[in-house]
Image (tube, rainbow, N blue to C red; front, side, top):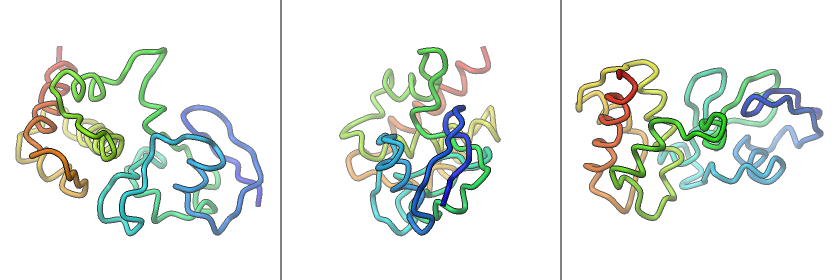
Length: 154
């Protein structure tokens, strides 16, 4: 099948296996390896991307379902060589340990801030509830999201 869509702002037209998961197509065919596979069951959030502006677990989506879609991966958040505020704050606040879950966490946090520009701690906890991290106690991750929200209001 010929996949026609936009990925990180770039038009993509290429032959792909329509039965492949979108996660596999992104990683193996398009070499966008920032998106990770944690569980393969939609339970951990490590593979979170945006499809038409909404966060989805790419391990649960078939490539054929991306036909005509606009997709943004962790690689697409940075603009003109400048990291997204969420990416910057995850670094500055020490919200990164092993880094495996972080792309999905950052995508979920960006989705949250897009919907709630001034989130409460409870909204952040709820908004990131579908993303699991095995390394941290989440405190620095939540602090990073709060700081990103503050930076974006300035």
